[in-house]
Image 1 (tube, rainbow, N blue to C red):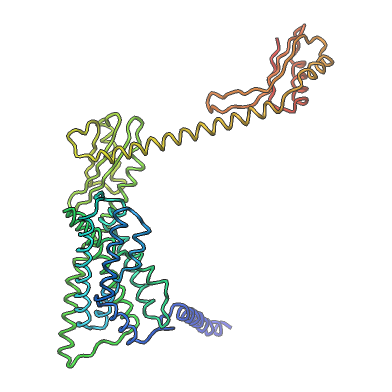
Image 2 (image 1 turned 90 degrees about the horizontal axis):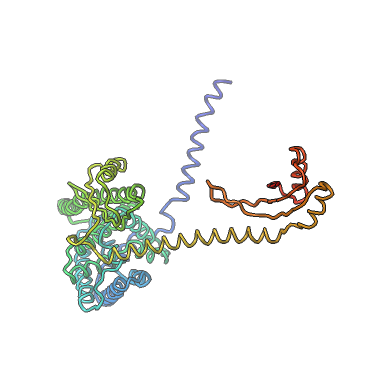
Length: 464
């Protein structure tokens, strides 16, 4: 029996693994409904070219996106991203690397350069003639790339190439990828930086576009290699080897700096998140208010700057604040506090005014809401007291039967405030005057009768 059990157990285990393998292949296979390689390559190749309709569509989309950024309209920006044909040459680069087609790579790079140049020129012209020059929140959001932008572009690129490799195209995927990867708004923001001579805006926005483009190309390359596309054939092995070396040298030139910069983006994102948690949890003071904070990431020295109004923060409190920073991973970060007079400081007065106004509105709304709740509670209790009025005359007559020596009597339900909790409590208050002094047993008898008669366990009897 023992030998049979040992012989049968290994056969069951492979059966389970085989079923799991069949399940995974059936549900996650990319071979089903896959278009032929020639059709996919031809489809992506057609999208590389920027001439005629594609070029005019790009110009119109750039104008629409620039207007959306200028007036801070998310809906307009999304519409521009749906129109934009920028995905074509970017996916062409990834496909060219995947099949070792140097000609396709060079053609895609050329057309991408044309598209980027026209996009920058169009957006710069728009922002030069636009009467609105204030950088709105939608525009500012494209000036500082984060690690999440890279992840979105990478997974969006995966979805785009997988959907594009199907025989029956999934019509809702490509528009979704265009919206998620956001190639158009960063280029328009870079044009705004050129128009306003703001190098920071231009560098941040253009870097965001480059990161998105590289991640989409990388996703395309990975799927092409995963699907096993055939490599392009060359006249001789030496030519093929030279082309392959050229491609990978170019890839390394692009990806090595990008990897380092992506690492810096990760560090910057972690630093900004930690700074936000620190300000939220630790910078709550009684007689002063943090109206703004700025987290400046630096490779050598990062700075967390707080702008405060109210009473100046004492040196001891500032030292305590600094001592709590290592717990948030901010041990090497320099903390600076701007408070008191801002005459000699470069401070955005409009931002301070807006922040203070928001704080006042929030405090006022919270205070009004608390008062409304208190008023409602007291109103309900008052209504309950009025609706449950006590029959004082009947109680007095019944008490005369119980205690004939009663002279004065009254009863009412009243609110008593607790000193510690400040919560009102309803109590039946009874006042009675008798001709003689009653014993403790007689008073308890009266109290029990009152509790039964008024149906209230909270009865306070005052006897004179």
